[in-house]
Length: 357
Image (tube, rainbow, N blue to C red; front, side, top):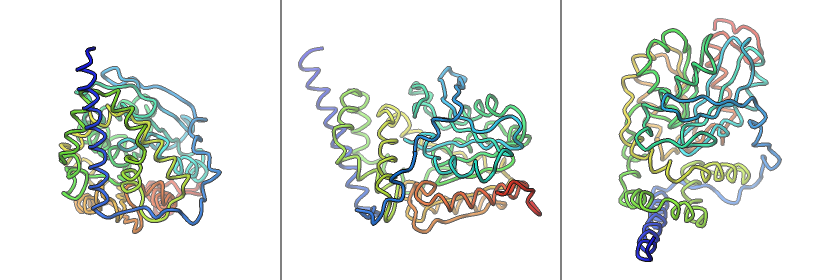
């Protein structure tokens, strides 16, 4: 590599860093913030690695990418609930659901968690395979391997919710015969409103970031880890609103930081262009939970309202003080809502048949 090439690539890495600064500034301009420092830290002693103790597995996607899984429960369960995490997250983002729902639902419900391609412990995908449609095929593959029989409930957050809808659009027979209910957290069926992530991915700074990643991904990855003062405001503003546990904030920051910068770049265009509206008729009269944060800048609550209007059997939950991570900042709200969703299928939190479920 010539000295000129090194200088040029270093310049691209710097452009990526400057893009991060511009994005953080854009988010600050929108106005949401996390109050800091928090008055208390209720999660100081929380074991956020709990999911590591669950049964590990690997599902090979149709293009050969390995998808890491964790399973709670066994084949004797009456239902299987599959959790699909969001963009730049990992299966650990459902920590509180994993922790509390296993106790509340008992052995009647098995839970399956997995990392999306390019995220967490899953394998690195090609650029062309980083589409919402492919995520839908990945989800269908996880269902086939980890829940080959019995009824299934799907819980998707953000990009994971888009993956659920993509699976419905491509595999309507799966939803007609196996999937009994769906929970869509902080997600959208099509391009999000102009105040959401679509505005950010069209920002000139992001285009510079994409160029930097394609030109010098190793240097840009290094610049991310060396510039937390750039990344932290972005994470705080988009994930939480109001007071938040410092431990929870650090957990979320580290989870997002572990996402390879290449994965981020590859999925940005997919999120911008996705349209899973064809999935909505497939869900039809199926029980659906739609939950979103009132202060979500990534996927504004207006998108949740649009989903609910298109799905007459859905329950719409607005988490008044939440941003894009309501299931992490206000887990009790999502836990209660998921209990109601399962109750509609005859499963109660007490492990007894729900009356009128």
